[in-house]
Image 1 (tube, rainbow, N blue to C red):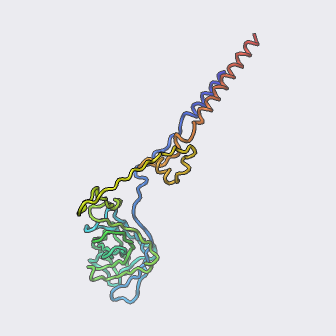
Image 2: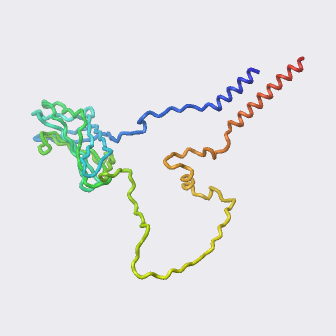
Length: 287
């Protein structure tokens, strides 16, 4: 008797207790709008014939709030590929900075962004030129709204942007991924729909009034067809009706049919009653 009761109780618990799902971590669905890939450069040093082939892992970070008429910033961060570093010419370098550039296409009058690092320390000839540890902010301003494609561009080393000592041009520009930068008009959100024209509620016409002709028609409402059902509705329209606005479609819910657990519980109760009756009958026969 105790075994039958324990079995029924365990079955009820298994059916009624729902599994607990782990809650998502805060910000788990929020991704960073950044890109990192190897950029191949050909670097020319002022007064030196030989050129250097340099490879840098360049990481670009796109702004999420770019608007027209306001300066925006694209982050640039670079690390050398081992064995492909940029080295100082024989005379050494002192009092120079790194100038990073990005190319932009797709928006009129917006072609590039420029950033400058802090002064680099004095470096002896033949040593590796260190890349900035902090991200370099490449600045630009868009006068027109739209969507631009962004790619890493040249980097220069020198005391000023107009007097570079080392100029590095991109060799694999066509192989680089183009990353999207969306610029919205100032005061508008990038996700706001475009305003639609609203028809006027009334219209005023000039001229003499014309006679009005009234036509009376009788419309008889047809009785609803009993065979009509949701199958005549297009799937997209049916989903729009059944799914609340702003919520995800979660299935049939109450329309999915009766809950199967009630049948299982009823069967378990019948088994419990039958087992109890058998035990009582055996005791009565034994007497």
